[in-house]
Image (tube, rainbow, N blue to C red):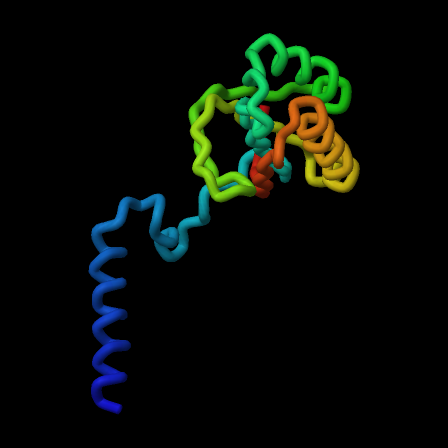
Length: 149
């Protein structure tokens, strides 16, 4: 029992030391001072991860093909704006091979109130890319965000 309470006490002491040296942004506001006001409105941020190598060995998806895909399949459903980032990525394919490839990250922001409709549209975009470019999958990441434009 004594060892258990020492561990808990040690953990609390370490946490206290870490918080004491932490920047103000990571600590609770001082007593009597209000927290910083929340900015923006509640949105969902969805990132889609598009690979460009084709598992069937065909030619990689070109930048021009990807841009045309975004223009046709994404912009009509998300006309208020989007961001495309270029990158390099890797993942293990269905056969266990680690594939390294040029990739694109598509960032979409939409109000939480539109999440249900947005989800359906995003799933349609994922399926369309998989079908058009013989992809095994399109990765998806969703997060809640406070957004102000």
